[in-house]
Length: 305
Image (tube, one colour):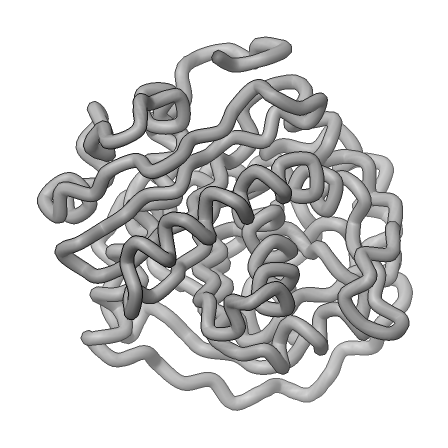
């Protein structure tokens, strides 16, 4: 997810917030690392057209080899969605019997319509809590598919009682996943887990605090990835907490000690503290345990079917 607004907005990035004190950060455990490495594979799978346009019952697969554990688990598509809205919100619901999970995965930016949604940066009231405001583009991307997804999700969960619900995404997909899970937790799925990789900021302070308070949030950033630095703090947007900041470079195996857990909706101890957003750092956006968006085809079509 790139932003044509980088040059114009970067000049304002230093406005609005003083540098807070350095926060204590902890490393993750090996067991946590294994979970994080697993769930990102569902986010990666959402980039493949064969998965988000699959027939019901088809096995999730990644021809570029970046979801091996999902393939090994034999996870299957319960419902897929794509090219049905002006925002081109795409993804799938999968059932993973091996790991006793129902997974809602949103695809990251692919089409021109996605990019338009990314760049709106205007607030809307999502009616999730008092004083809460969400980015209109990200919230709209969820609302336009919400009714059908909730209907299918209810069926998937009822057929698989006791399975955990995981909502995942990378880039734009992570932004939509964050708002979707906040909504779903108020609609009968309070224990739904969020795994958001490379998400931009999606909320004002009250909404970010509301989502943080819901718990079960795992939001990942990587080194100096520019996307999580947008929209700018000066525009009133903040992140949910905590941040799982991956400090290892691109294209290397991530170790447990390479991930720092940092609390706070505004913290300069992680990704935000690595400088202004720059397109020169965009490679960091692609590498979350593996090349997460490898399933994208070349080009930026107006729509993807």
